[in-house]
Amino acid sequence: MSGDAFDILGLPAKFDLAAAEIQRAYLARITSLHPDARGGVEDPEVARLNAAKQTLDDAESRASTLLTRLGGASKEQDRSLPDGFLMRMMAAREALDEAKAAGRTAELDRFVDEAERAREGHIREVGRLFSVAAGGDRGALTAIRRELNAWRYIERLLEQVDAGGGGL
Image (tube, rainbow, N blue to C red; front, side, top):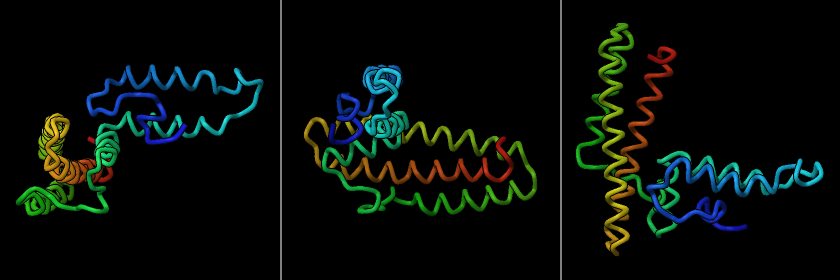
């Protein structure tokens, strides 16, 4: 087996894969490689299958893998963000730090709700842009990378909330 996570699991290269679809493909392949099915012999392909499943289970990683497959830039190659996004993120981090320091849990809860809505917005937009890219619009690949970069910022902010107080 070679290729990216889609190839490894034998799945179509698309963003809108259902979790059950990923699980079925994984189980179909891992079953034949399990040591019990191979007389106790561990197959090195198991690690690749596990990594592929982990990649496709995570929507952000799946989108990044698909973008690269379609010829789009990696996060290392293109760090662009939507206009004004970085300033909004800096203000949000400052507000988050202040709320955490003051123990204002209601404010932190609102922050998490807003960040989760922003994440969902990025997921929807990435899905829409992949549909546009499928129609041959190469400019959509640049827009997808920009959305993915912003999405990563939102994920890091949510991790910061969780790290600061053991979760909400």
